[in-house]
Length: 419
Ligand SMILES: NC(=O)c1ccc[n+]([C@@H]2O[C@H](COP(=O)([O-])OP(=O)(O)OC[C@H]3O[C@@H](n4cnc5c(N)ncnc54)[C@H](OP(=O)(O)O)[C@@H]3O)[C@@H](O)[C@H]2O)c1
Image 1 (cartoon, protein in one colour):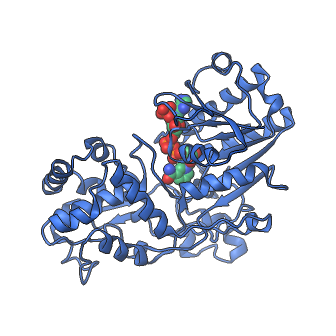
Image 2 (image 1 turned 180 degrees about the vertical axis):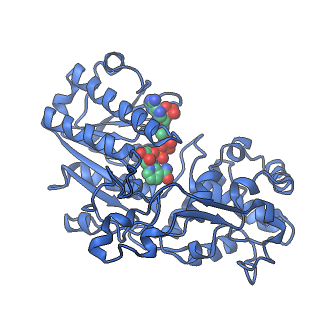
């Protein structure tokens, strides 16, 4: 008998874990937790509506009679302020753990899998040393200039988890995915939705040109993505793999990709043309008002390795991290011609207005505007027997198809015929 609890079960990473657990006939019961939506409909699934911001005592009441051998913790509340993110997401985790300690459910627990991410390495702050390794030091304390590294909610959560594991004599695993490609119902906050909408609207605009909104460096840097499905498979593997307990793991598709390869494929898929000189100011002159140049207030994470790498006065350390975009998707989405093109798509194919209103344009601004890549390795998990792999383009393709079925993106073959 194998049982599981999945928190954040209706989100991108959590819903993929529930789907993959359901594919395993040895799983007899899955408790899915979230505040609003109902979970997957299946005889083995019991959904519990609860707010993990409630006190541990309230949590214990909601969790009464619920226990499992494996917990997959994917609940997450985005907060723009790093300190607030650490406080809120730390509380979600500690309230839940205290809740299962109070009910006694913790006695049955074997492994607790916590989903974190590459922000663990400060990829949102500036250039990190690459490839990113699980043994890299945390970015904590003095940055070297008198100021402190900003709080990181993953560190807060990992500390809470490790302490509780010692208290309860169970094991923990922490996963670090990067830029997750996937989709969950009523959850429009993901990279694939925003890119798909940008491509579909570009198809409708005069000339059907697919201009890369990000900067030139960004187009050529290398990156790693994580399919929500692959991440789910990894979490199921990590729950029982011998030797995986009490470890932190990068979880990425296994290929190294770059927009220089992905963007022309996006253009082909959505029936768009790539401009001959994409980064020539003449190509983007109609969008001058939509460009962005923002210096960030952070320090490049590579600076903690500066001495060892022999780059103490190096550009990699001293250059202020910045976001540069010839076309900032957040501003682009506000243009009258863009909104009109979206309106045409929405009316013609009956698309969901919420997809447009809630699309994470700010996430695209960051992912396409940064001038550094985020490449990690899967060496640590592979040494323990992990063999999972997914090609990043296939992850995008499969997610676009799901978004078409959900009425978020237009059916692409029809789009190509109609515009
Ligand atoms: N998505 C990405 O691209 C990405 C990339 C790297 C790392 N990550 C990390 O992966 C983790 C999971 O993120 P995700 O993208 O899967 O999140 P998500 O899609 O936004 O889902 C969040 C889940 O948490 C639930 N939730 C939020 N607040 C809650 C509360 N107070 N009580 C109970 N449930 C609550 C939500 O359901 P309700 O709102 O209905 O409660 C939802 O099921 C996070 O640590 C995130 O930083 C994500």
